[in-house]
Structures are given as C-alpha cells and as structure tokens.
Image (cartoon, rainbow, N blue to C red; front, top):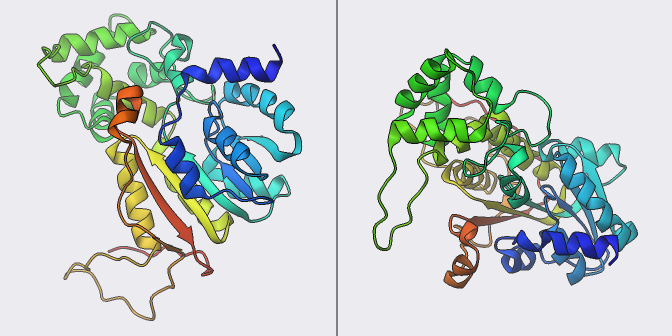
Length: 333
C-alpha cells in the first residue's frame, strides 16, 4: 500500500460533516485556488481537489495535521500545498508563500475527530490522557489553566465558553481539589466534574450528555483562543478573497455560529436597528464586502445525522465576496 493510500484509509474514521454541501457551496472550478483553513484530516480538501482541476492551499496549526498533509502533497503534487500556522493569519501566511487573492475559503471550526479520538492529545473526557488540549502543542495547556487560575477566572471561562450554568460550583471544587493534588489527567478532571454535577438518567428519545462536556469545551476554547481565532479568520478571509470568491464556514456550537452569523450580517449590509442611546452614524454607509445568496444556515440531513452523530450540531453559512474594499471596523458605543 502506498503512503497516500494508507493515509487515506487512516482518515476514513474521520467523516467530514456537510461534505457535499460544502463542495456545492464552494463551486470548485478548473484553474482556481481555494484555501482550506482547517485542513485536519483533509476530507474537504480531497473532495474539492477531486471535483475540479484546481489548487488547494491548506493551513493547520496541528503538527499531526501537517504530517498527514505530506501524503496529500505526494498525491496531488503542485495542486496542493500546506502552510503551518493559524487560519486567523491566513492573509499573512498566503502573502509570505507568494500566493495572491483566492477564489474561495472553507473553514471547519472546532476540534477534529483525530484530536478527540487520540487520548494523548488530552481533548477527551472519555479516554484518559494528559490534560493538554493544545492544538499546536505550544503555549498554555488545560492543566496549566485548572491548576493556576483564580477561582473566579475559572468560573468565568467555564460559564462563557461552556455555557455551563453551574460553573461556580465546578470552579470551587477544582480549586479545593488542586490544593491537595494538581490535575494532570483528563479522567481526573472529568470525574471531579461528574461528582459535582451528577449524571443525568437516560430517557427515551433524549441523548444523555456527559456532565464534563461543557467544562472540557470551555477549556479547549480558552486554551486555543478559538473564538479569537475565528474572528481573525473571518476578517482574513475578507482580505484574501477575490470578487465573487466564496466563504464557507461550518461551525458546531452556538458561540461559533453567532460570531459567523454576526460577521456575515454586518459585512453584507444587514445592520440591526441602532439603540436610541447610541449616537447617530455620520457619513455614507460603507459598501458591503459580502452578499448572501441565502440568509440563514444549512444543516445536515436526518440521514447524515444518523450516519455521523458528530454532525448533529453542525451549521453551515455561506457568503460571497463583492468588489468593495475590506470593511473598516467601526467603534460601538
């Protein structure tokens, strides 16, 4: 078996969500160039490369994803390249690589199946591993956060990024326990959270969610600055897209989707009614840098959700670049 075939087989357990819908929305065409800002296992990149004689410039900050991309390079040669870094820096990364404006950008936000399924990465509360959660392997780990942050800061992270209503109880329990022994393993933290919250009993027609789900999500988002990265990535996509270039974003929870929805609404000229306490805007409104063929989200079919449970929370939004300049940020009162 060739290296590329082995890599393809190893990626089979990673099922890209809304794959057909993403490719349809991107509309790949011969000779065009697209950015896959979250390469991961390469599922979207492969589908696009196989649908047209186009190029993909992929970006990922995960060293394991960079390693997987070597097989893609061997298979697709000059039609594929990989850049190591954050998709929020795609404008700088593309410029340094000598790339010009591109015809499309696709982003699949959040953690990949590879990261979740590999216990040693520390993302999972179901498998024991080091309490890490760093996508790049560098910087502050989840263990650093739970073992050193003040109780109020911990509670705020768990509440804001995990939308966990009992965040203060969890943070208090973490601080009490770490005084006796620091947290080092994922199951250690998951067990403590479960002891604080208890476990819901299964009921007919209702999926039981592990009590540590929201806490682990919050720590992962904080450690990797995922919402900041998404905000920067959307702005970078605006800067690198050609007129009529397409931005396709798949997100998996409400915090991400609200950011994407707000960005696309603002950049397409949809501005909510101003507060009566805010100063009236002066001067002409900036021309929209995007337009929306369809306002709202595209969700997986029931068949896809049945086939791939991780698709159940997915939402896809699409925006198309106009020829207007990049919108300048405005100060809000």
